[in-house]
Image 1 (cartoon, rainbow, N blue to C red):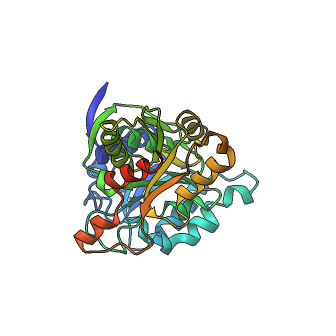
Image 2: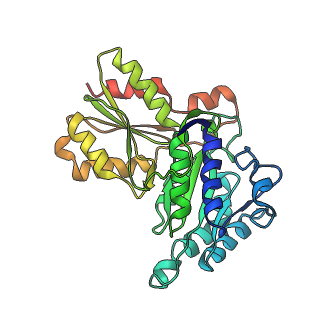
Image 3: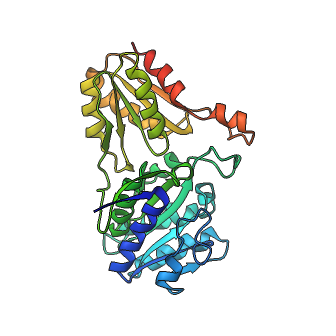
Amino acid sequence: MMKQMTYAEAIRDGMRVEMKKDPNVILYGEDVGMFGGCFGVTAGLFEEFGPKRVLDTPISETAIVGSAVGAAAAGLRPIAEIMFVDFLGVCLDELMNQAAKMRYMFGGKATLPMVVRTPCGAGMGAAAQHSQSLEALLTHIPGLKVVMPSTPADGKGLMQAAIQDNNPVIYIEHKQLLPVTGDVEEGEYVVPIGKADIKRQGADVTIVAWSWMVSKALEAAEALEKEGIDAEVVDPRTLVPLDKEAILSSVEKTGRLVIVHEAVKTNGFGAEIAAIAADEGFDYLDAPIKRVTAPDTPIPFSPPLEAAYLPNAEKIVKAVKELF
């Protein structure tokens, strides 16, 4: 059965389904309890599951993620919320040197079934310390899985997959997507981690985008169609592990590649995708690889400057046209 849900409701439903199935799944973070989370994603879970499974924490990212590492190693399946992805720097040691490495360093005898939920992205006038897209930083740490859903259905399916996984998963949800609605499967619904989705079929150019930028890529594809250019939009959905076969297969078909991400350009994850395409799909390419990204600056508070800072459909269309 399908039901219309917002992106936020779908993420919540994914957590609810797993919490009903498994009493070892617990949820905690700043204001996730009675308040329902800073962006309302956890609303109602405190009332449904009670204070022993949905817990408010002090304002200490180190304590939140550090305790999740210990809880996961001891047999629980914690979902730890960090209110903004920007704050992961506070608990980076717990992520980088503990969660990511413990299973490896114990020869597989320890598992770390933990999810770190965190919102990313600009467009809300939240300025430089509350608006970043830091996925590339996280993908550089072996041992962490990184997922970034772009639709309500993927939001639910990837949340269930993340909770079921026996490795630490960083689940990055975009603030701009929270009110977006779509059809979502009720009950059990799992989207495999590491499996890309073709959001739009096309023959002339491949546009790879994730999270909020998928909607911008689709908007650009509609505009390009009116000018006789048939764009295929590939949503990796998960950056680690990356479904590079899906990307290379699309590039083989179209011969052109444009990569779109909201994060800054230098060392953004788009550079990794471009390197893969150049290394393993060079013979498929009929034109240079293009990236459409944010500039290498902090995110401005001023609404007009922030709008100019962000990638959009017009910038994507311009980049695509340069390939023909």
